[in-house]
Image 1 (cartoon, rainbow, N blue to C red):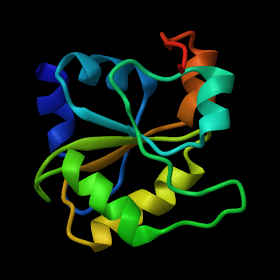
Image 2 (cartoon, rainbow, N blue to C red):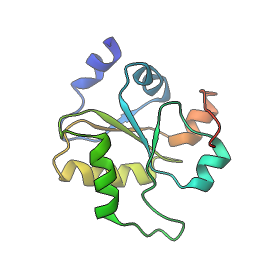
Image 3 (cartoon, helix red, strand yellow):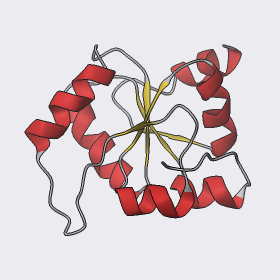
Image 4 (cartoon, one colour):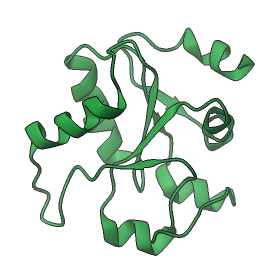
Length: 129
């Protein structure tokens, strides 16, 4: 919980870049992790334990914001709730995170460097099934 308290002050209307070692500790605190990648990416790299899989962009770069937000709101039930977005290299999550901040979400973070950095640092993944 000390890690969460430390980074809490960085939140509030800013997308927070979280290093893999911080995200790893947040998993233990049951912070909602949302992986926005596609199924082919889940299969290729595996997923972070306890991450919710909620694809944003399809393989053509298209998205359905209303459908995605309906599923997102089942996971993040308050605009004050802390959550972490995950993608391959942190580009999609930067865009999505900034959009969510514009919608009033106050505790928005993403995995800095995405799954690429997570894997480079040899952090745990589980197979996608």
